[in-house]
Image (cartoon, rainbow, N blue to C red; front, side, top):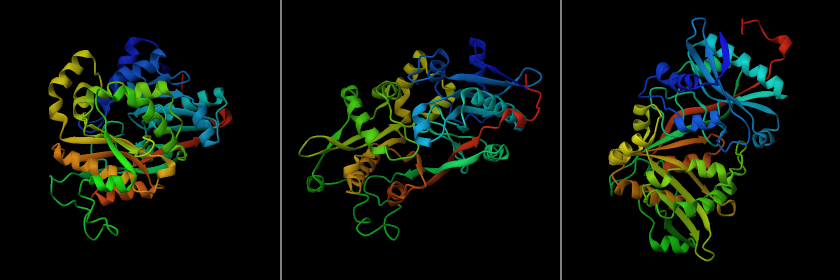
Length: 395
C-alpha cells in the first residue's frame, strides 16, 4: 500500500470519484465537490491547511482516501492536541491500516496526542460514522457507511466518542394526529403537539414568530450565527463558528430555502432572536445522481426541478438562547414547523445527529412520533509511537 498527498487535478478527481466506486449510490451521500476543492486549494475558511490523502494498492488503484488537518479550537474543547481526519472512505482493512499508519506519522510530526474523526472538517460541520441503520440512506449534512466500518475502526484501536442518533419523523397530512400523540406523550403534550401555536400562545410566552425569506437571508445570517454559537457553547464538541465559516455553510441557502421552514422566535419586548429552526428541502437524491458535482449547469437543473425535492426535508440545526432554554421556545417552533411541513406537502423530516447525552432534544422528536434512524459516533485513538509501529511495507 502507498499513501500519497493529493497534488494534481487527476489525483483530486480520484479523491472525488472513490465513494461512487465503493458504495451504493442510493445510500451514500457525496460531499460537495466545490467544498473538497476549496480544501485542496486552501481557499476554505478553515484556519489551517487541509491535506488530502489517497491510498493506492500494489496495482496503483485508489483504495482509500482521507484528510489530515488540525484545529486549535477543537483541541481546547477536547483538552488534548489532536490530528483530525475526515472525508474518509476505505475499500478494505489493509487500506485502513495503511491510512492510519500515515495519520499516525503526521500526528507525531505535528506533536498531536490523538487521532480524532472522521470530521469534515469539524464535528459541528459534518462527518461521523453510522453504527446502525445501514439499510437507510444518508442525507445532506449526515453520513452513510457500510456495516463493517465500525468494526474496522475498533479493530485498529479506536474508541467511540460522542455517540448519537439521527432521527426521522413522518409528517402527517394537515389535521391528522401525530404518531406520537396519546400514551407516549407527556402531560399536556397530546392535545397540543399536532396543532400550530395560536397567536395567544406566542403572546403568553412573550414571543413573536418570524419566517425567514430569501430576501432576508443575508441579513439574518449574522444574527443566526450569534444565536447558534451561544445555543451550543456548552456541548463538548462544539467549536465557535466564525463569520467566514458561516458564510461558506450558508452559501446558496437562499437558493434552496423554503420560506416556511426557517423560523425565528423573537423576544416580544427586545425583538432579539431567542430561538430558531432551520430546515431545508432534502436534495440528497439530486446530489447522489450528480456525485456531489453541483456546478453551474447542475444548479440550473436543480432550480428547474426543485419542486421534486419538496417531499422530504432535513432539519439542519435548531437552538435556543441559553437563558431561554427549558421555557418551551423550541416546542412552539417545532409545532409551527410541523404544521408548515404538512401544509407544504412534505411527508418526512430527517434530522442531523442528536447526542445521547442530550435527552431533551430527543424527546422533542419522540413527541412528534419520530424514531432514531442511524446510530452515530466519532472515533478517537491515541497516537502510536514510531517505535511501536508495525512494518506494513508503507512507502
